[in-house]
Length: 504
Image 1 (cartoon, rainbow, N blue to C red):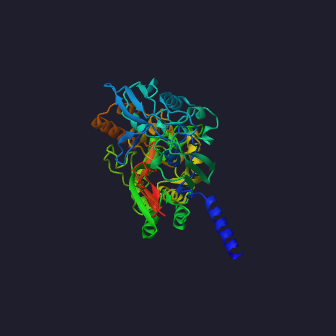
Image 2 (cartoon, one colour):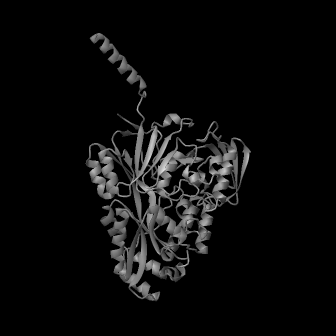
């Protein structure tokens, strides 16, 4: 009797064990500083969206840790002698996540879409491309209007992202994106999470070790850190400078930091929208210059970032070979007042500054608010969710906006779209024909010294034109559980998951 019950119990246990999966599903949870905007690489503009795209979508080419262009879906490429033809050989045997085949026709579809889709923010990045030719299923040829030294670098990012053509023609593509990356879209809850799952037919599947990747937007850096310490996050970007000591002191956590390519600045609305012409910032560049001169960038770095950041006066990070060695001007309240007087501005001047609704940005806004009041500016801070802030910028519904750019390996990617009069990210609608000419000329030569000289002229000119008051360069600071192995921080700040694993 007892023997019989024991045998039945053992058999029951074996049956239960047999019903369990062989291995528990592995999930990587990543904290982001804000919710990405739409998940369409041709229409998207947020830094945080690029984290998702890095896992969801392959690009024609990529960069390595030293910012050099390396193969992606294009295995090799060759320029013509005049620099106006780029021939790319494509990786074979690749499929999109819906089963559609990746080939040269798909590349042509994607590049054509990026250049013609209404609202595409990739148009200026690909403005040198005249046409895309399908030479064979595994070879594509880009014919350019003029030589473009920045084009390959642009193709390492959203302009070179490959979407599944059949899915991309659907009107709801951004709600159900389909690419060819290691992880495919599973679900999204706005302001809560984006879930990706492993793509079992990925061409390089063995390099990726998680069944699921979950991106969790948490605007407050202290809350992100609390989630990391409690084990609810495995990795988070954007560790606040004030929290660096906390992370390094926690035996369960690791800190990874690298000097980034990105900057933060204040964009002035010069000519975008109905209200812009009446703005004092639109009428006279001296008002913009005065605003910038009233900011003490060194003090801002110490107060808001405990000295971890680098004061800026340009778009090119110190890690870039194109960084212009021009001293950041010291704060000069008296000169700022004189510029306002010369421009005929009566003080106090009431202005509104858009600020993202996270504690770090709010603190930066408050420090700036206090500083420039001494020069005669009365600043009203208007808080906004990040994607909303960018939407308002794009529509011209702003006077001033505190926003930045994550930076690109090639200098063109950090300035052309923002400063050129036809740039798709030129939200302030700044325009200077001479600056346009320099920027275009810099695109058209591969001579590093010649490009450096041209960008030097641009940076010098922008000190007085002041379409953007650059504030600081941001380091990329990540916190993670020590169980996470193989993760490296790259200057572009993105999370690359190839080779990343989790120990038990």
